[in-house]
Amino acid sequence: MRHIPIHKILARAKSLAKRRHSVTIYVKVAKNVYYDGTSYRVRVTNDYERTSKNFRKLHKALKFRDKLLQLT
Image (cartoon, rainbow, N blue to C red; front, side, top):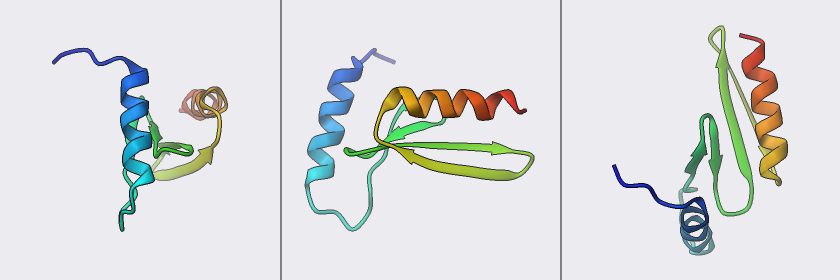
């Protein structure tokens, strides 16, 4: 698998998100963190309960994800 720089992934996600789609496209940027062109979604499952929350800033999403993962 070839390595693609994160800025290229985000640029592609932004260009796709600007187009009108009936389905939101999420691009995986880190473990349990996805980007849709405007916000970062954190999705973590603990004890069969899924937590999903959106953030505007990546560092806030990563802190929230790390906090959730510590609970397991």
